[in-house]
Image (cartoon, rainbow, N blue to C red; front, side):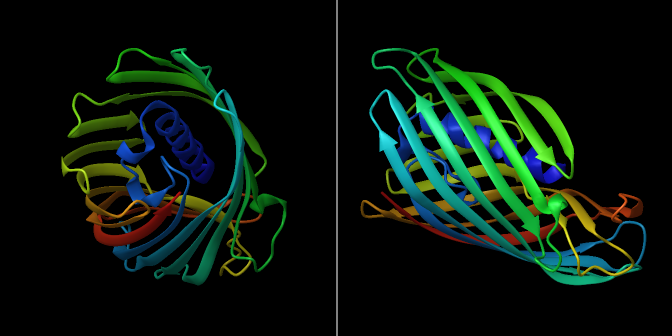
Length: 295
């Protein structure tokens, strides 16, 4: 469930930022596609996360691509389609060793309603996907996120939004509230707050953005290549980082970020959802780089 919980709130953050402020002014933590439609590539190196309850640790790398496929409609009603893919190297030592590659493949269908000369707007998303190692794909690998929100522009510098998120993951259906805001007190500063993602940015000049960001980096996968009857991997992980982004021309942007992964928890389950291992992970450093080409 952690994968869908993090995914749905990330989708909510994307929806909110896309609708409220000029796309060129957004901070895009971890190149997740906020703001202008963009082709994006992101790579993360993660130092070993030591197991809290014994010897061993988790080593990972992550690579993600985002591809907008289509957009159509008018200024009042807009539809969009995009494709996202993430690959993650997963090397776990200790009592139950696992060395595999994990994958997430998602398609997002979105609709945005924003009447001209109105402070109100609405957004909806449906995001089906697969989270698996592709060794033994079954129904548990399928997940779905659906979202509906309404927003209101409180002032020229402050916007609020609220709605509902529904997730389906490993046979479970959950419903969550979604609340968030964006505050832009000046051209140089911006605060984007939609828990669990928070970004505080400063732009000394238009082409450079320095930001402090926090965001979830966990996930859940149905696997067929694990040892000791492991069929489900459930990872909770958070990241806090300092990010530096440089825009080049009208389309290109490059970014670097580095910080600490924290709040880690790893749970391994059998096909019957029996817990085989449940352990905390010690904090560790990470570094990442991203490149985007925006329309």
